[in-house]
Amino acid sequence: MNKWIRLWLVCCFPLIADGQLRIGTGQISGIYQEHCAVCHGRDLRGGLGGPLVGQMPNKLTDEALARWIRDGNVDANMPAFKDILSEQEIRALVIYIREHQQMQTASQRTQTEPSGRGFVMETVVGGLSTPWGMAFLPDGSFLVTERSGNLRHFVEGELRSPVRGVPKAWASGQGGLLDVALHPDFASNGWIYLGLSQSDWKGSGGTAIARGRIRDNTWVDHEWIFQTPPEHRTRRSFHFGTRIILKDGFLFFAIGDRGEQASAQDLSSPNGRVHRLHDDGRVPEDNPFRNTEGAFPSSWTLGNRNIQGMDVDPVTGQLWAAEHGPRGGDELNLIAPGLNYGWPVITHGMNYDGTPITEKTEAEGMEQPKLYWTPSIAVCGIHFYTGSLFPEWRNHLFAAGLASEQLHRLKIVNNEVVEEEVVLRGEGRIRAIATGPEGAIYLVLNTPDRIVRLVPAP
Ligand code: HEC
Image 1 (cartoon, protein in one colour):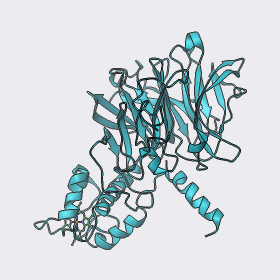
Image 2 (tube, rainbow, N blue to C red; image 1 turned 135 degrees about the vertical axis):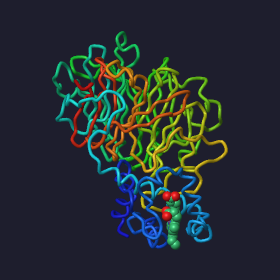
Image 3 (tube, helix red, strand yellow; image 1 turned 30 degrees about the vertical axis):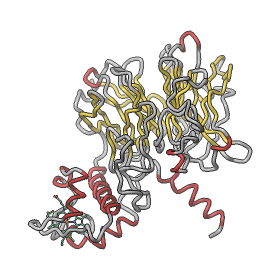
Image 4 (cartoon, helix red, strand yellow; image 1 turned 90 degrees about the vertical axis):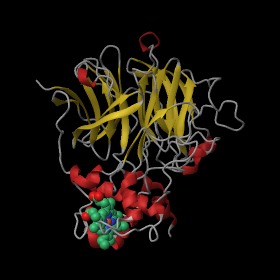
């Protein structure tokens, strides 16, 4: 194969796939058509066997669906497939059925009946170029990043020209200027943190964190807090992560696996995990792998595929993270030091092309997600709502879907998800969520690129 075509396939395939619904396609579709369609219909709507979309199968757990396929049911006249299909293929079929269930409901546009009061969506600012992250300043204005590399300040209804002199981002594929966050003591120290992708003169890149201050719409006092060492950079322009969380003098951020799955389990790599540093970039003495020979010292976790959502539960102080899984394996995890979240050894998803990765969804010494989305919603930002305009949603976790264009609301009690609801859909790819100073829910949206806010209906 021509080198350039191959390079394109290697580099760009996962790039297209992450954040897009690739559901109902691929090799698994062939397996379904060969073994199941004759009874359940080519479109899963039923025939000799019942429909695999709609009410009934929705009520079955993944494990129950797998059991039906594996063991069949003599009384119901459903054949067993355990001698014909591998466990991986059965797992992939479960994901395939879930995808078709999703496709049936995805056509319902606009918001579902919300549990609380109704809300209206107002556009705050449009005319942005792939906005990615946002942060409110104490004066009520906010900063927003554009993936192309601009940091912009929105003050009193007006979007200022880009801040001059911000560190140059490698705007390629999923990379560019990503998250922005303020130091908790911003009012007194003025520190602003940026997450971005960087590349060297050879076109090899990685995730970096910088901090600086803004004076006269110019980036000053610049400091690098973290830069991916050259030996861990790659030319691939996807799976950079990241989100920035500042808490108790520490800085947390995440880097994706950079398209090298094994790196997430490699102690010496910075990729595929959450990191913890002091807010000035020093490595804390009590980091879990600090004294492990050869380990990357700022590692806080292992086995995370590509985290693009992180926030702290205001009730418990616990750190939560959402990661893009492979097809059908997006995860919400409770983050704790030194734990291994399993990628790519265990996963609830399969490859984007519909081939199985592994049938293993759990293993000794590896954490289970608190929630996983099958099919994937392409989960991006997560945010605990702390405002007062929607009192019934206070401290609930909101999760943003890119491909699904859905806003999910999750109620978490004792570190478990006890309730989930889709409160908005079909308004564009949702990248990030924030609570505004007036208590509204702000959403950073792509296609069309804009920032909106949700306020209670009059
Ligand atoms: C010979 C016909 C036949 C074939 C082939 C067949 N099934 Fe079934 N299946 C049935 C019947 C009959 C039932 C009984 C319940 C119903 O009508 O849905 C059933 C039930 C099920 C259920 C439980 C549904 C529910 O709502 O409880 C699942 C899941 C399922 N099949 C999946 C599959 C998959 C996946 C394949 C292909 C690997 C497959 N089946 C192949 C006939 C078939």
